[in-house]
Length: 72
Image (cartoon, rainbow, N blue to C red; front, side):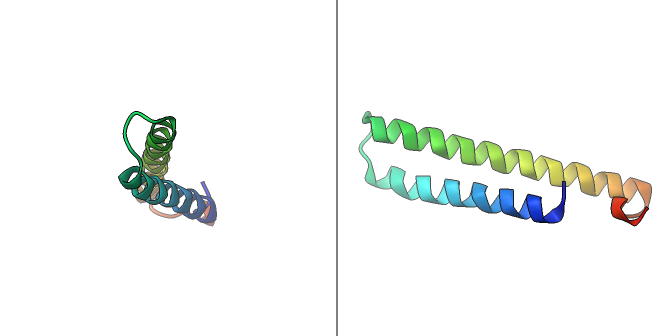
């Protein structure tokens, strides 16, 4: 995963979580809008977890190999 791609995905995840979190505060539970916004919040959290796990794995691999994978 390139740093730019990871940063962009993390930005999208942050945007989804913040926007849907604010919207959930204004919507009443049980409405279709609430359900869609809750689904969007879950997708944003899932995207953030996937990107975070990817960053963790890449950094761990770089530390084990003793350098960045792009320096080969």
